[in-house]
Length: 283
Ligand SMILES: C[S@@+](CC[C@H](N)C(=O)[O-])C[C@H]1O[C@@H](n2cnc3c(N)ncnc32)[C@H](O)[C@@H]1O
Image 1: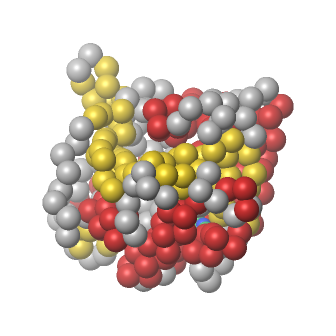
Image 2: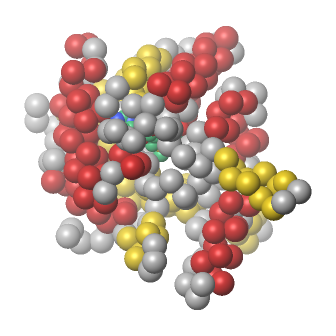
């Protein structure tokens, strides 16, 4: 295990609720993706670690947040997702950004990103300035709930129907091995000195395991040769008048209440870990 890195910067990425960040900028069907990145988080990472005209890659692009924010900032982007339903959604979001005059361009590819080197266009090799991504970690962390006459019903909490190859449905070691393969391939697409930004949270797996996913992913990233440069906290809550205003969904509140009722000392998460790594300068 590598030494834990101190948090060096806090990103105020949730001063506006997620739905307000998306309204008018993403198609309404985007709500069906269970684990979207905050648009302000993606925009902050892209603005900080790239320049206009640069190429950004998200090998697990889901609804296309990285791609859309890159386009609006005048960057070009490539996204990959294994679920055709999500790449269709990402394409709809790309089309919307284009109609809104976003100066950048984006391409989305359906496929298993562990085979990224077979999917990426030749022009992307050693050309990517930033890899910005977030792995799927479990079916039950996110989602929407709807109140019905007979109680509450969960929806949009699954990463598609396909169990084959989607890292959301593999074993824990399968997730880490798959993510290592994706990062290894991404390394070869990065230009020398290019940046990798991974966002993730610690997770609980039943019954009582608390897993340091950020620490595990940092170890995976280092194992493929990436050099850690910064660890940041991206807020999932607002900060107003020095107070934290939580933005947890009803789904998140329900999960925390249930866990506490079972005797687990669970608190609402108000930030996501952001791991920043770099490819060495030498080709
Ligand atoms: C946390 S979500 C990413 C969400 C995205 N950042 C957004 O804002 O919508 C992780 C994504 O990884 C995708 N995924 C899982 N296994 C994959 C694989 N082997 N290859 C490509 N994509 C994969 C899932 O389908 C899911 O959409």
